Figure 1 (cartoon, rainbow, N blue to C red):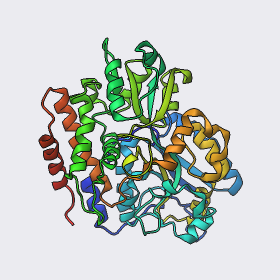
Figure 2: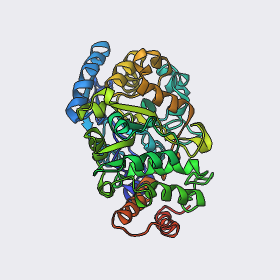
Figure 3: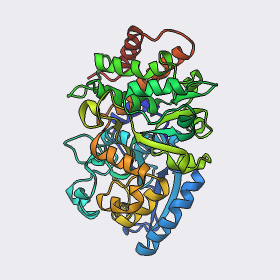
Figure 4: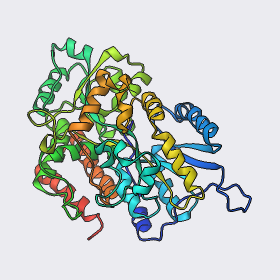
Length: 439
């Protein structure tokens, strides 16, 4: 995900969808009444650029190229992230949806459970060059393990720690932090004169989930048991949430106003020099859109508790990214799979991921030197060595909503000067767990 996505807010709707017979998409038709597959596909793209218009400028030439190659026209709609999940959920029940769509990769298992998406079995993967073309970590966020994926990776992203070089130099900080203790120590040096050491988005539910999931891994917690039951109140989960909120409540390196941030305001503050550090996924293009020059910021792997990033308790990022899915009752299944093949081909992977500042999930496309810049090399290595997929369970969307809200409320407490204790964190997480479907 390029910018942090607005959290999945359709938990109740999703529960209804999962209990209904899914209809899928397939909005394209040529109106002739013939059995021939239509020559038009409808594509819902997610907002990856700095605006919807930027996305259209990036994508339309490529869609024109596909039409020239295949004779199939692709009708493009770029859907804002705040609308995307509910639009998809409505389409799964009404049948009035696109043929092909982008989904946040964390939604894969939830949407897979609806039964509306085309399963990518061995036969379908063969149509796009085979499953082994894709990076393993990206494939890990395409649906429930042991089932055929519900989607195909399109853009890959990871979290890193971005820092303002001038702010560091002015404060006499000679190297960026690599552990959380160092983040706090450095952040305190940088928190002065109305400026903050670190920026967060306390009201952004998805961002909250991404951060506490990683901290949970570092504390040995997964938020779900091996059989898929919600496990939000384990010691590790409570420690993770408290550690994150304590960046404001205890360490005080996060400005209290960040409790209300939900739409990239922390990136704007960073670009304007109001904060010195920010944890973000694939942020270079967003910084450029904010007017920040590339030599004004640096990037290092996101922090760990101690040591170096790696697997298990040294995980330092969730596997972020965008997947491409097909509604399985599309009237042009052949055209839809051809389009996925086109978009995941080496040439298009290089073009599109360069445009968005993301990493190709296709191995062979990563060899392009454009993906070996200092900034992107950090993200690529994180995806390969130290990122973990969010829980691939049908209830993942509800998890984002209820736990993300719990973290938001705790940030509100911190901003208001109310104490954030182990007991208050656990109480919020117990309330969140009670809102999850019972198994």
